[in-house]
Image 1: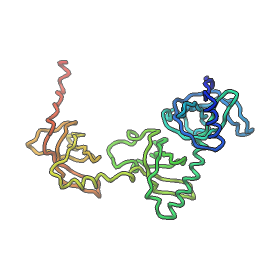
Image 2 (image 1 turned 180 degrees about the horizontal axis):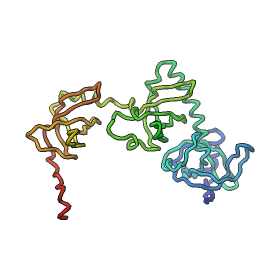
Image 3 (image 1 turned 120 degrees about the vertical axis):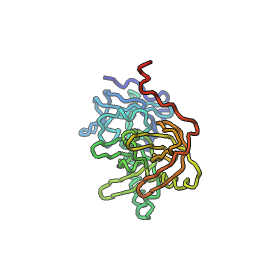
Image 4 (image 1 turned 90 degrees about the vertical axis):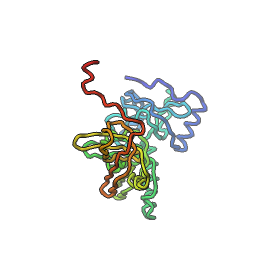
Length: 301
C-alpha cells in the first residue's frame, strides 16, 4: 500500500498560486499521470472531518510542475469500477484541501464538474428558448460505454450525456467498440435536452458532413481514387473511398481480379442517399496490382 510521500509543491511561489486558486475557486487543469491505491486524508461524510483512509487515487500533474492527488470519490459523481482508463487524460478540478503540514494537495474533479454543470444547463435552457440548441458545437470527452444498453457516455462541461452508436459517425461497417476510446476528446451537438429529467443526448455525427453529400459533389468527375477493403465470393467487392464511405465495387471483365489493399481508380455508377448505398466501377490500378499470395506457399518456406 502506497502513501502520499511526494510533496505537491516545491516553492513558496507555487504554494501562493495554489492558495489563490483555492480562495477564488478557480478551475485548474492537469494531466492524470497514473492511478494507484493509497492511504490518504479524505473528508468523512458523517463527521465532515478529514480522516486517513485507503482509497483509489488519481495522480495529476499541473502545468507548473505541481503534483496533485484526487481520491476516487472526488473524481466523479459517477462511481467507476476503476479509474485506470483515465490515465493520460486531461482533467479540470478545484483545489479541495492544502495540507500545509505534509505539503500535500488534494483536488476535486467532481466539484469542478458541479460548477461547470450549473453553467452549462443554464446555457442550454437559453439556447432552447431561442431555438439555437441544435446549432452549437460543444467539446466532449468519452468516459465509457455500456455494452448492455449500447450507450456511449460523453462528459460535456461536467454533465454526463449519452450517445448511441448511430450518432457517433456516418460509418456503419466497423463495430462501435473499435471506434471509441475512453478519454478521447470529440466535438458534439445536442440533439435532445430533457430539462425535467435532466438528460442530454448528444451526437458526434451531426458535427460532420454527410459523406454521401460529398460523394454527390464528385459524381461529375471522370475518376476518383479508392482502396479495395474487401473481396468476397458471395458479397462481392468493397471499396473504401476518401470521403469516408465503403461502397460496393464492380470490376469489368478486362481487368484483373482485385485483392485487398489494391489502390484503384473508379467511376461512380449510382448513389442512393436515402438508403445509404452507392456503387462504383473499377477503371484501373494506378499503382499496379498487388501480388496475390500463393495459399500453398507456406509448404516451401
